[in-house]
Amino acid sequence: MAGRTGDTPNRLDRRKARTRASLVRAAQAFIAAGRSNVPILEITQAADVGMGSFYNHFDSKEGLYEAAVEAALDAHGSLLDELTTDLDDPAHVFAQSFRLTGRLHRRTPELSKVLLNNGLSLVGSDKGLAPRVRRDIDAAVRAGRFSVRDPELALVTVAGAALCLGRLLHDHPERDDAEAADHITEDLLRMLGLSADEAREICRRPLPDLDGLARPDSAA
View 1 (cartoon, rainbow, N blue to C red):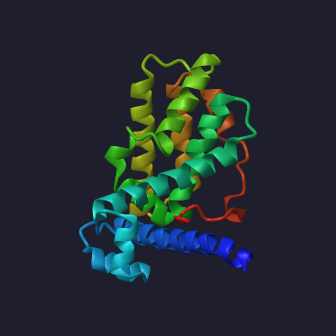
View 2: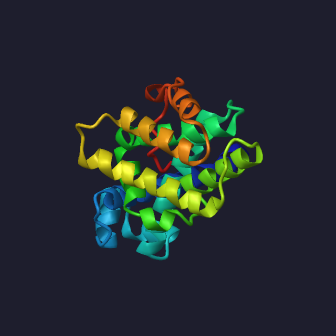
View 3: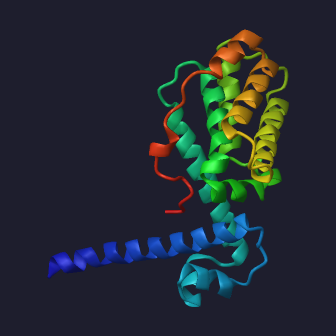
């Protein structure tokens, strides 16, 4: 009997977590579709939860949407960290992260569209791509790999390139996402101080197998 009592909070916590994740996923789907003005009732119906459950987790639709964007940022950032953890050269870390980000626009379209539809607010975010770009640029500058006069402006340039690339790839499905991502990464590396030859060589290094990874566009 004691075992059951002890298990009850765990089951309750898991149920609450599933409900919250369902709401966040539903919100991400609406954001990705450019439908941020839907009523809360429509969100709860899409999440297959009751209206009362919504207010057990969020005070407002704005709070849910903020959580949905943060979850997308965390998913993207965590995946990049996982896929660059074994690299020692900060210039390689930067390049691999950008090249993978370019490819993920097509492989995780819903997550990509969540990020693109909140693009201007993401440059100053402490989650997702922006802080990792700043971290990698700073590390490469300290290591003497990059030559950057103003890291903040470099961050703006890189973030803008990532967002514009994503929009281009969605608008022009005939474009090769890998080729486009590598081309822009090569240009960014040159802008940040690498020689043309080294930038080209780094952008031709093999990448981790994205197809074998779990999809990062889940709120769970």
